Image (cartoon, rainbow, N blue to C red):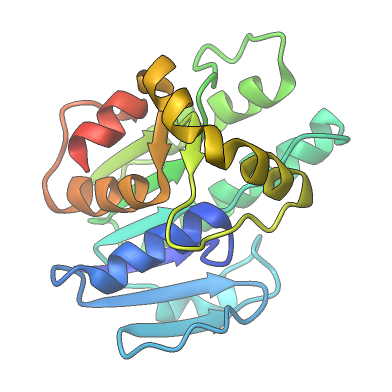
Amino acid sequence: MKAIVFGASGMVGQGVLRECLASPEVESVLLIGRSPSGESHPKVREIVHPDLYDYAGIADQIGGYDACFFCLGVSSSGMSEAEYHRVTYELTLAAAKALRAKSPGMTFCYVSGEGTDGTEKARTMWARVKGKTENALLGLGFAHAYMFRPGFIQPLGGIKSKTPSYRMLYSLAGPLFPVIKALAPTHVTTTENVGRAMINVALRPYVKPVLDNRDINAIA
């Protein structure tokens, strides 16, 4: 399988990339991002692309891929709905449409989040925007598309979030992870499980397009 990864420098993206590099079923990985990832591996090729809203300049380099693992995302904290809509819905759909045009047979996996509202009517702004993004992706016509809705994600193998507030949260919550997992097992997953689940649904289609923590952990 040949895969494309967006957001490889983020916490989830790092986990997904790590599982891709470890998997004998993943032949090669193309990283697309605004800045160099610093990753060096025989499987990896990288395109540094400053404008993630326009793919005309690299369209000839994104064809023939089997899967896209889209792990880009930002916190909605301090953002207006218009701002969050642009960096969540518009950016994601720009990439997805470009990939759909060049690799129509691919599987597209999108990291959404627990609490996303597919009706797009939630009082919470981010849940509406994420729901709209999911619905648009499911309607694009990919061979398969999966919306991943993880809750609490435990970073493994030394992986850390780039967001300072998230780093602090995970630092504080890390020692409590066994307790959190015991009390709320259906709301917890790991970076490894997210990565493995993405690879597995790209290789063997799953029965549901929207995957919660229980699905992610079972598929992994």
